[in-house]
Length: 264
Image 1 (cartoon, rainbow, N blue to C red):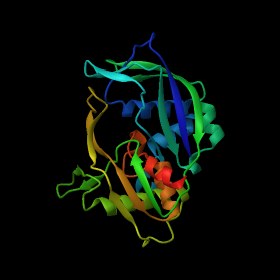
Image 2 (cartoon, rainbow, N blue to C red):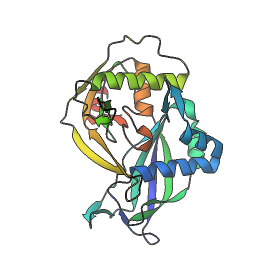
Image 3 (cartoon, rainbow, N blue to C red):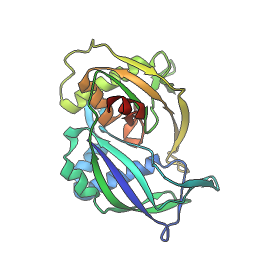
């Protein structure tokens, strides 16, 4: 269940600049808005989430901010346009259309950090019609795909979607999300699964909780790709994101314009 949120920017109150790395702050805004309507649900989602194979999943994801007009100034994003578009997606079992639209309607919030922040007001929130899910589809990333591989010393290594281990990691991640969302495993785990990158992956190193003791850096990759999987798994990927760290702004995907043209 996907929503397009149009944000009106009040440049008089806080200014017109954003840091390059705003994903964590966007995630915090979502939890804050959810807590205004149902603090228990928000706290549970933040602290626990949905469980599958001892892993936690929030089962929502969001895009980067789409700013019609901006420029780079003082190592920050200077917003020239008056509005921004933002996409947020939830696995349907989490909530209802009325719940999400109701709590986000006309919300006001600040986004950014101490050095650069903007004041936003939700101008509109629109439920987006889903694509027709098929066993073979073409996608592009609306936020970078994050994949981590456990190495011998126990630490995680960020890998590209072209890495040989990307395919089994992506498949298992989607199977885990299906189980977390439905409460039972997908009935057939031996289905044909393919993931083929069709554009050169663009690497992004994103700072989380910048300028704090908890600062960390996460690498993700943006690209276009084709995927083969059962329709139910396709929907999980579309609604909840692919790869890891979806709830802090990674792994949101959309069907490509080329695919849309083929279907029309």
